[in-house]
Image (cartoon, rainbow, N blue to C red; front, side):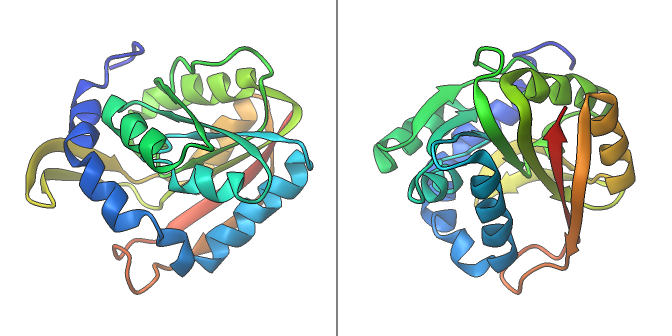
Length: 213
């Protein structure tokens, strides 16, 4: 699926689990010290009055964490149910429904953007378009933090927390992602890998911190 709005299976899956997702994961950053450190780095690079986009924000708990530390945050998610749940939970965050391939934002709108485990639902051929969109909405010199599961497999879910879904999770090679970011006009400034925390799925994770040139 290469056209914006074509990710209907992803949208339906997250609509289906939105309330359960928010209830289970609202405090997940409490158990992720590295994620908090990287997000704090994003805030520092964005500046004290920075505007940060959380792309694939789900119910908005990461965006709310950023907002609680002084950033103006905009959460973007494909799932309308996720954005509805997020607005109810986190009134200090602005939520917009939208696709990573056609972000609902003007050019150069944000000082920074984060995409934590959201590009894993894109087909490999869609990543260049997604990264071009991120570059478009970032100001020159803006920061982009992206994270994903490491590998070359595709894991499929038919059921999630007892609900029927049809959802693929694509694992990615950090070198490939770094190359695509470079092709899109980013400079990768840092790469961090980590093993899963005890409460997480047993997958290796990677984080790339990039600058929009």
